[in-house]
Image (cartoon, rainbow, N blue to C red; front, side, top):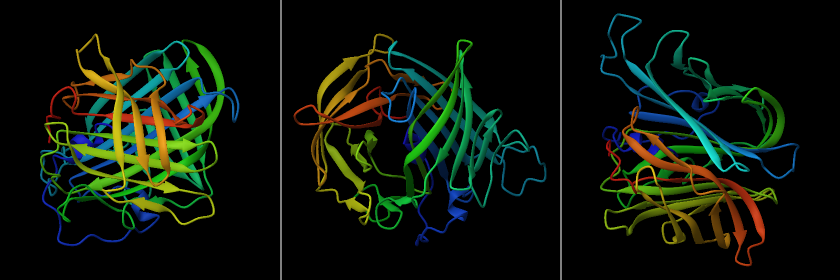
Length: 346
């Protein structure tokens, strides 16, 4: 959920009714909705099951542009495409990132209706068979991904309608594809590295303003035993919780959504960015129906300054999940916004 939630909060009033998920159409774009994003994160090691060496983020946003929908020119800015990518080197404790913002252009920048096919120049994400293909690059790196799963989408909230506040009108359409088996080729500073691992894909769209939240904390974790855990909280300006939610997928069982009274996320350690002076909560104690757990950033310095394209400074990075005895449970990504000031588009 990166800057994607910042843009979500800028959208338009909700329709009176929301349709149920319909696949494969809902893998694709929803241009009548005010904001939409596809968000891919993952961890990669030298072989399947090996300790991770790298984490990555690929996020595409689609939102309406300034040109009217009925503008006659094919080059009119009816839709905008925004992208963020990042690569975290866990050993070197270094993150590289890049950002792009373009109007939708035939063949160069688009999000197709009917199935997942998104492009921002040579950054791409496309559904293929039982999985996805993705490709992107940034400073000194290029990454090619083949992602596969035999599992259906995880519908967040109530059948894909994810509440974001006490008002029933505050919700988004939201599903996830956790535990994506991944084969990858990373070119890093001229070195070609074959890698493997697990990934997580979120797709969310909305036409709503989500109230007075200052920011949010979100995590998506692929557990080593095959389960998948989502937790999030929206925060008020004074730091108190405005709304919480999440889900648990357990192989062989029905997916379980969490209500707002079932999730407790409390920071236990902070890191202050030398670049922006922002104080980020990088370690957490978590309580939910899946149990009590600890979450820690793989390394602290995973702040992303995306002010050039979104006006936002946020923290997005690889993180590890442990039980209360600090035994490893899994790994995934943590996202933090609103600590460097209220996201400008809320």
